[in-house]
Every structure is written in C-alpha cells, then in structure tokens.
Length: 291
Ligand code: SD4
Image 1 (cartoon, protein in one colour):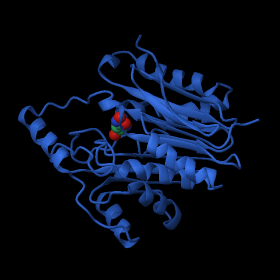
Image 2 (spheres, protein in one colour; image 1 turned 180 degrees about the horizontal axis):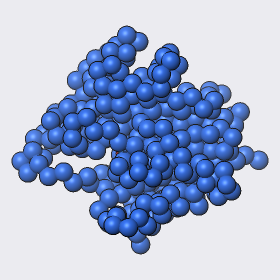
Image 3 (cartoon, helix red, strand yellow; image 1 turned 45 degrees about the vertical axis):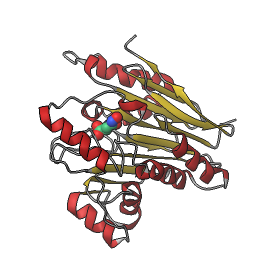
C-alpha cells in the first residue's frame, strides 16, 4: 500500500509543492511535477537563494546551479549559469536533448538560449542592496537557515510509483566566483534510484559533497534502513568527522523510499520541509542532531 502521489521539498515551500501536486493530481509524471514545482521558487524574487533574486557571489554576479534526475536513472545539470532564471528546465533539456549530463557557465547559458530561454538580469534591487551592505566588511560566513527558506530540493512519486527529483539554487551568498556547491552534483545534492527511493540536500554544500550525502542515503535505504534512519546516518557522517566544527554550519536532508515512507534530518534546529500526501500539503519541522 504505497503512498502515492507524494511530494516532499526542502524548507517552507508550500507554493512549489502545490504546483508539483497539481501536476500529479492530473495524472502527470513525477518528472514534470518536480520541474514545475522548482520553477515556482526560481521565479519567486523574495527567495534569495534560488533563481531570480538570488544573492550574488562576492563580485555581484548571480550564478545558478540546478539538476534533475528521473526514474530511468537519467540526470541533467547546469552549474554556474548567469542570466537564465529557470535553470531547472535547462537541466532537463541537458538530460533530454544533449549527449551530456552537465554543462557549465557560458556554454550552459548559450545552450539555454539556443533552446529558447530568455536572458535576463537576475540581480534584484533587494539582493544588490544586500550585497553592497555585505561588501563593507566582506566577511564570508554562510548563514544557517536563512529565513527558513533556502535552496529547494524536491522529490516526487507519481501515480505509477515512479520517482524523480530536482534541486535548484543560487548557492551560498557571497561565494567565490566560480564556486559550485552540492546542489547540481549527482549523488551529493540529489540522487534517485527508482527501485529504492530518492534523497536531496540543503545547507553547506561543501560538507554534502565530501560525504556524497544523497547517494549515501539511497544506498543506506537499499541496505534496509528507513528514509529517516538513512538521513540520520548521513548527518552522522558529517558531524562525527574529526575536526568538523558543525556548530557553525547547517546541512539538511530529505528522503523517500519506494513505499512512500519519508524522512528528514538536519544538524541544527529549524530545518523544515513541505510534504504533500493524502491530498494535504503541510510544512513540518525536521528532527535534528544538535540538541
Ligand atoms: C550550496 N547547498 O550551494 C547549497 C546552498 C543551500 O541552504 O542549500 N543553502 O551549497
């Protein structure tokens, strides 16, 4: 009696989850659902960590990362893309229209334009002001739980029980030019295995990358762990490393398995996720390690 359809997404993202649920309720695929859901946050200028209005790197350039993975084990991603808002859809085009899986920077932007995407300035007045204020001291300190709303990672199960996932971000505010985090990297920011389940991440990407978090979670579920146990162990791999000062950074994971069981866990309090199941879309606080 698997629970389906189901959508789960990082942070307080009711509108994105609603859009994904709308696709699934009409019988659409999990792949269409996660793409449509993520587009909502990319277009939301108030969210300063995704798409338009994202906070820039330290030189004032907004650079976006995104990836998508489907139930066939196919994946597409773009990294460090400027001037294109809906990078999740560009990632899907990379997956479906090219012989490659990952395009970066100018090449990704050119590919997007060739596919009909419009170039536009992604730096909003509000984000420009925030950057100018930051420049005064220029201290790079990733802030955890920015307004309880951050990178969106989304997992969906459609009526046929197929699983897809997507993840899109502007990365960490005031990062070095060219910096890429975990979000667009297969196995780190996102991983799907349609036989087992899926996982996605948010937070300090460097720590997720070093532990290949999302792949780890899916492999732990393959070995019999529940999504909750798998998320907890993946956080354990980060906080139990010697010399890691996890007090200063946040990582959060969400996961689902093929049966529609789900889990979420973070290092610190205030990570949350939106969950759509049984026709209800609600935000829940995640359990966390640092109590
Ligand atoms: C990154 N993981 O670029 C992303 C940022 C993020 O909450 O998720 N912030 O490292």
